[in-house]
Length: 289
Ligand SMILES: *Cc1c(COP(=O)(O)O)cnc(C)c1O
Image 1 (cartoon, rainbow, N blue to C red):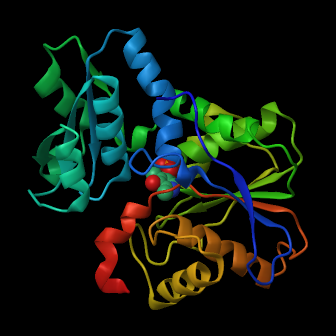
Image 2 (image 1 turned 120 degrees about the vertical axis):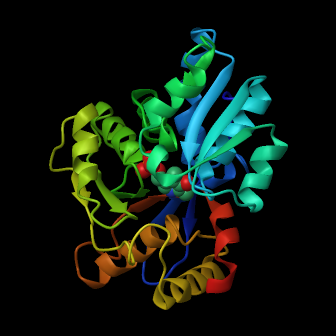
């Protein structure tokens, strides 16, 4: 399942840009979406190499990572368990997790903080259980994300991605450095106080001038939106035919437009946006539209 993928680079017509392209990782798979596919590729390879049969991971009730892990486990003949942050709820994402056979353990916020302790408490005697951190954050995940850069056949002035843990951004920067590309990597954290992402990236690779972190596009914080962001999504999707999710990719595309208005990038620059998928995030936000 981690062999053939369809993720073309498509040029889109969005005013005022003349060379705006999108790497369509959102087309890789509906459930193992975008960067979650990239991240799980080498995580699952490692789990398999260590003869693990059960994936154990962590996430909120609307986590793309949980759905992706559930689907990937089912297709690989592995069992999966997730510790879900907060009280027991039902929603579209968790329904998919359950259908893929994932066991869900709802966990109060206090206990959820210590993930290694939770793993110990439940799986200390299970040598076949494999710990996957929240969002899939790991060195293996960065290897998979670096491959996005290896697939490019053109060069760009600017490459943009949205960031949660910063693992995808780390992989992209590593890829850019390995291929010695001139492109600048623009990272748009979707959480408030996203400065920690620089430290996350520095754990795996050397930060250089090619990295730009844009900390002012969180719109109030993780999974927070404003009427302005929702309006932007409607305009963008109406003009381009590309769907965005309010949690990640909308904030990235908004940043691209705003940085052009501020003169930090130019409408004639060659720009590549990584569409990291996550469109099921729309389901939890119906009332915002
Ligand atoms: C999980 C996710 C991200 C964040 O990726 P990180 O590697 O955690 O920074 C970005 N975009 C989408 C659509 C996601 O689902």
